Image 1 (cartoon, rainbow, N blue to C red):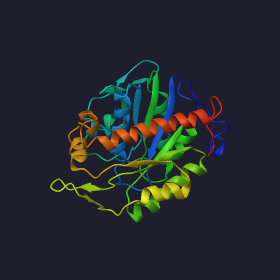
Image 2: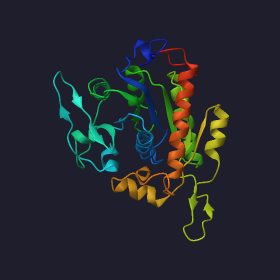
Image 3: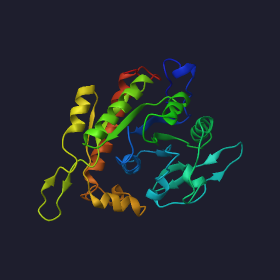
Image 4: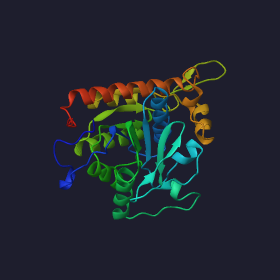
Length: 282
């Protein structure tokens, strides 16, 4: 059953649940370049491969990379009553502004337009029955995240970071932002955590080590694990065949599947603790 906030959202907005969508999970980060979209895409696909009905909304409207990572450039079909049919890719229903604006032409958005496109993607897309709707947010703590919280009740948010001190500082800002707008935090995941030498199998800490786990402990939130820095994950995304499609036996996909399992468990915990139809305020 869909869920609603126990109180109006920020500035008196009343988030409206999406009929048929059970859990809505945002994937955010305090800064760009930490692999947020890579994790959002692989999370959606891993949950789908586990037997769940999944949607993926590319909310990064400044730099919509989901179409490239999924190897798709088709245009969604317009239905009656201003409804939009999402594209289906590897069993996941997907919508992205990149489908509407293909190529390298930049998108220049002003505040009201941001709210409008987010509302349309959430309310006008024919999502059908979903266990999870994963939303890839733009990096940072700007308008899109706020618009999202005002439009639909989020089950929770995932914060992506790397082990470097700069990325962790920005991740803390993202955690505080979600707390300020009363969104449960599913947890923190550390991407590009370590590199395994292909010759000697020795782990190399390229961007330091352990910062994500320490930050999660400091803020009292769940740590969703370490995803390794693996060139194969990057190549998979660049060629439109995300790493998890190779299956759980693929070395480059193991940490991504483990991350997805932890997310599913945390979402279940959040929904179990919250009263029926109400998001629990953390």
